[in-house]
Amino acid sequence: MHLDHADTYPPRHTYGATGPHRPDGTRRALRVGLGGPVGSGKTATVAALCRALRDQLSLAVVTNDIYTREDAEFLLRNAVLPPERITAVETGACPHTAIRDDISANLEAVEELEETVGPLDLILVESGGDNLTATFSKGLVDAQVFVIDVAGGDDIPRKGGPGVTTADLLVVNKTDLAPYVGSDLARMARDAEAQRGELPVAFTSLVAEDGVRPIADWVRTRLAAWTAAPA
Amino acid sequence: MPTNETPPPPRDVRGPAAGGRSPSPDGPDRGRQPLPGGGVLGGVGALLVLADGRFPAGGHAHSGGAEAAVAAGRIRDAGSLEAFCRGRLHTVGLTAAGLAAAAAAGLDPLVLDDAADARTPSSALRVTARRLGRQLMRAARAAWPSPELDALAAARPRGAHQPVVLGLTAHAAALGPPEAAYAAGYEVVSGPATAVVRLLSLDPFEATAVLARLAPELDQVVARAADAARRALDEGPDALPAASAPLLDIAAEQHATWSVRLFAS
Image 1 (cartoon, rainbow over the protein chains, first blue to last red):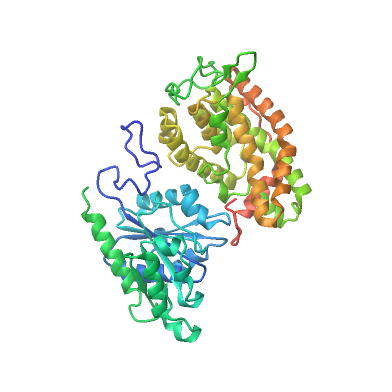
Image 2: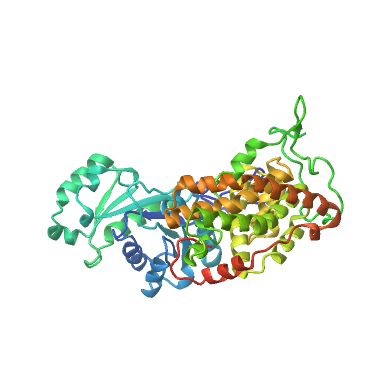
């Protein structure tokens, strides 16, 4: 389904993240991408965000599993959102292709969610676990979060790469594990700042009470800015 | 003849169904320019864009039945990949190329969409064809804006069959029916070849050599498809090829139920 006005020619075709309005002129849902290496806690972060935000916001999630529907099923099993608000996109063994080079399936998914359960305030698009170069297309999302964890090695912020360097929010997850894996959080913070300058970094431990708070607060700030922008 | 500066003329997709030959420049020779010294120049530049494996229309997530064939042991190496692709090319490839050529020749895309349904016995593959058609429509409208694509998108909001959208896209790009058939036929074999490189870690040079060896047969399939499309302008869509591959249909139905898979189809 195409959400564009029928009376403009040549029309806009992608209804991508660059076009912020619905056909009726209101602002569409903010789209936030979550990417990062395998096992860093993307799905757990999405689940925690849903629990933290679902009472105040109308939410939906798109997952990009690599070879199963496990991420979508994890979210369903944990009942973080009603099933009609969770869609799984299949990526043909290339998660980065589906979020960056050929975003057509993901755009279909976000537009379908807005059609079937909308209007929505926020859509979270979770990438399949990938490598440090995986980033989201600006045609798909308005902002992206890159999730790494302390157990993946405390030199990852120093190594940089497009995800660590350019994401709108860098999350360093599983801080509770730092003492056990010998990761130096202060060093990670220094390295991240050197790579990212003014861009924010959140250190999280999702096992702690309200551990997702720093990310949820960042999302709320982005959403307030999105909603307040001129219509 | 149209050039890149001259957009194709608007066409009502709900216009007269197959039967009346469309006026020039909608005929079979559309998009071709005579060359000094003989021969014709088709819009090869636009064809390269359309047939590029990186064209963002969702194909990367589909294996064209190769994932099921690998699991069943029917594709094990370059030789069995070639046999698989050859079978696909002369069955579903011919059918897809005929539909695409007919859409590019000016047959009513809604009539062709019904004809594609009738030629796709597997429900799973009908769903796949419409999903890919919708994804292609998105990329096509961005690449070659045209009222005829807008009209088909409005008439089939859940997606038309991918070969029909492909043919109409070729038309919007000022390509002729043979070029549309080339894009459709090539995709039918290049998709599985790419997928098998990932599934079997097959040597990518061997996979590409398979495609190169099939190229002369692709030429033959395109000739048959373009000829059928020409006849379909007078005789209707029944003149189009209806070749199918029952094993592909059965395997596609089974594949759609797998809980762990790399590709969507």
